[in-house]
Amino acid sequence: MRHPEPFEDFGDVDEIARGLSSSDASVRRLAVIELAETSNSAAVSFLSRATADSSSDVRLQAARALGEFDGSDVAEALVQAVTDPVPDVARAAADSLAELRDPEVSEVLLPFVSHGSSFVRAAIFRALKALQVNASLSSAVVALADSDAAVRAQAVGVIGYLKRLDTLPSLIHASKDASASVRLAAISALSFARNELAAQASADALADDDWQVRAAAAETIGRVGSPSTSETLIRSLDDSYWQVRQKILQSLGRLGTPDAVPAIVPLLADDVPSVRKEAAAALGEISEPSAREALEEHALDPDPDVRKTVLWALNRLGPD
Image (tube, rainbow, N blue to C red):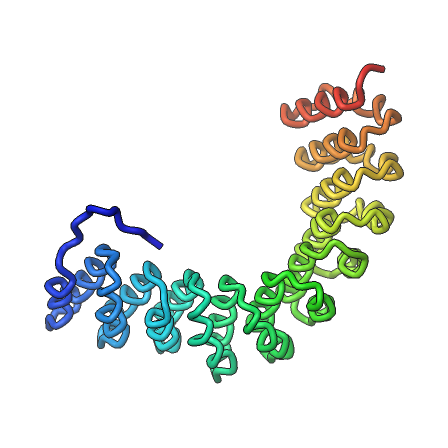
């Protein structure tokens, strides 16, 4: 959201708003643009009315323009705009809703979490996520049973952003959802919880059918910081997706598990430079002397970033 300079002259809002009465849709659209550029809260009422314009181009511009403002009146206009029959307008309104930051607008949004349209429900939960208000928790938990995966994924986001330990059972349940997008959101959300329940749920997700969920699980384990899951990470180092191997290496380095060294060393010869680099970085972070010989063998890796990381790792190990 833009904030006006203290002494910047944006023009008279009422004068600009007269353009909204033009019979020419292009003139009305230009008026909407100029109203947004004033950054004057007095423009909100005019922009709100423009979301009901007969021209979808004007409504689209108004939905985008309202994203420059905040407050309950803005939320009320956007909630109506998100039901627009033109998909581009509805999506623009949903994007602007997600820009709201005033916690008080949650009172406007919450009544719409059970709206008949799944698109609207998802947009509302997406907006509530950024607001981080506890009042949205119960609705989000209920929405984990929604028939639409997009709604469930956004509801998981609401729960995750609140970062409350008492929501762990709900997030762990969502990590086993039928939809990969929901499982991905849930596993990512678990990263705030530094306990064994979150670590074990993430370790279980390393066997997920979806590689993005597995990558998120590997990253979450590193953030949760539970050495008890190191063995599961080590067993998963042969994942067919390099992105997953990369995340596992990052987490093993973060956890600093010496037992992982024999399994990491072969990845210094991985086909993917990013994986080789992370393997060297993990060995450097673990700083196990037994890795020195393997690192020295790869000091002339063809990739400059890998060579640089190998040298860093060797320096971490200290003199021979």
